[in-house]
Length: 447
Image (cartoon, rainbow, N blue to C red):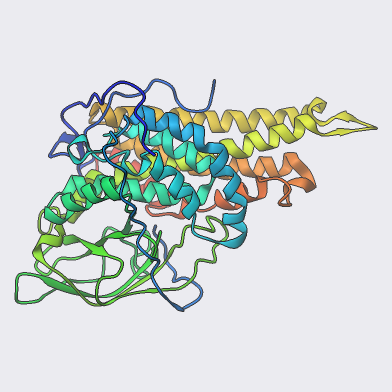
């Protein structure tokens, strides 16, 4: 249960929006932010293919469980402290989540109990008002303990930030419900036909004649598909531009198809959403009509890129730590301790250097975003490229360093290796980001 341990929330004014021109500007609230944290963590869904199995799934029962009142919401720093105290429990559940491909309900319950579902919710909605830097710390910790849980938590947090960034009657009510009842949220943006260019949907809203719209079509790779309570759906607007609408998992015309059988992130339930004339009233619109592109580049992008970078750094650090501990404890009668071999020492050093560099770039970029630096666009995009590639590199080195043991479930290294492959191909993919980074650096519009 929530437990208050210290100071009240100290929120700052002037939340940020990231414009499609590549600059931050002062805009209506995304989330109130607390001061940036100097410490950088542990030192001292998008795609182009449909899920493999086309089976219709019954949606999971509601996750909602009202909090016991009156219980004050902890501050963002208190939630981070509680996450650190829960990592052993989260990590203990990770092998079964991976082996069985089951949704991480137990881990999500742990996070919900300590207030993490409300981490980025604004104080006005009853949340903790976390900053980008604080989200990075949380996602690194959770992602290192269990990558599937980290991905679900990341998408939930990004959705909460997006609901606040867009606003509207349904959005405000949903954020308050998330804070009060521990409901889970996620994005439904990706389509098979758009791939990495998720911001340009093919699904189109059609007017109902009563002020609302209806939507038919398929969304791919919906993280927490059939499990979350709220879904933010991106479509072409009925008139011009793009819109985002808030949908419930049991809304009429909603069907969930598939089973996630990916290489890694085995428990994130990234499946397909089928919509058959799903109706959205005007109150379900999130953000200004036709302006979803601004919401995507102003809110979704910075929160998602920072969070995914952090999950990737967490995976890298977890693999490096597991490999190093194995090396320290591995001895041979004829050759002594594995840690005394110079080649192995070089591998350990490379793992630490690679993870540390990615973390430092991530926190530098998140700090620029928190401070409203107009040049934060490039480092935030660079952080995603660097962190996801660092996760691949570190886990690969860890597999080499741990030898045959690393290829078996006796060590978590092989799980980290598989989980690390997802980030680079999540939209915007690293190839797309390199193009955007280059455009920004030479003064061209992004995207």
